[in-house]
Image 1 (cartoon, rainbow, N blue to C red):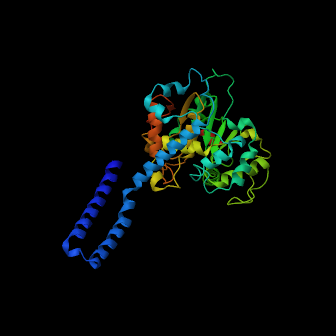
Image 2: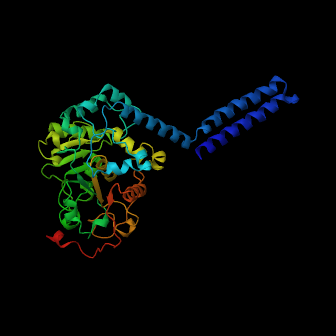
Image 3: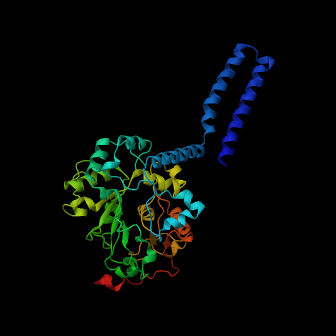
Length: 406
């Protein structure tokens, strides 16, 4: 389709030039004062039509090709081969499926830290703005934050005891499908549990569990969740012992907030100036508690898995949701992944969140493509790369769980 559009544009331009050439050759237009206006028309048509040869779709094709070439350059700079994985790992399933192999690339860097900030990396990330790169960012801001992530543990999501260990992860979204699900104990039985945004636990332990190993957020999603869901019981973000916070660098403010948190000082500048990170992460948080997603990983999963049409229409505004990035992070690090509270085919049967006191429909905003994300989860579930919690029964909103009244 893209080639056909491009060719039709080229054919249209050729027809125009043929028409002009015939006019110029016609005997009544031999005089210079007759040719001059036609030459002006020719120049105008050139100016007007040449940009059309490259339609928005063509430009998007060029962008995708350059992104894949950039991805390949990242992989080529990584030394060594893929790590040895457990016999239960989802990576074996990926390797056996041609379509999955074209999507997954387990060599793409997942986390950014001190040693990932090099002149080469800085140059590679100058072609795209946050969250996909560092274009337009101040190197002092990026460099200062990453210099504080100096310990090698911040380059990995978690440490494996042995290469044969089967690491099971549960990624818990906030979808209304979890209300009345009774999945709490199953969720807590996983080695690691990921949560995002307004992750309310009190009163819903039977449905969502109590364990939190990782909490993923952007500064914007963290603050908005505390503001929007306070009345529902979300007054503080999870602070379980040993918890690790995964920062998604959607804006400059995420780097500034993380640096302030690690230094134990108020935010020095920007939209969050004067804010105290201790309100969210406690006083004197330790370095090993924080991880920061690599911009190139966000670019990679967006291009390979969630390349929505909205990325073209709302370029510079669209990005995968926080939940999607956490689920894709788990799929690139854990051996077995289960997803709870994410989009399913019958999402309209359930409220937006499991803690809604009355039915609230899911709202689709332009910055995320939730339907495409739901399609991806179903695809990966069907191919047995992950397990997606699904059910048919509608949620009863006549009462909250008894524990919520305590």
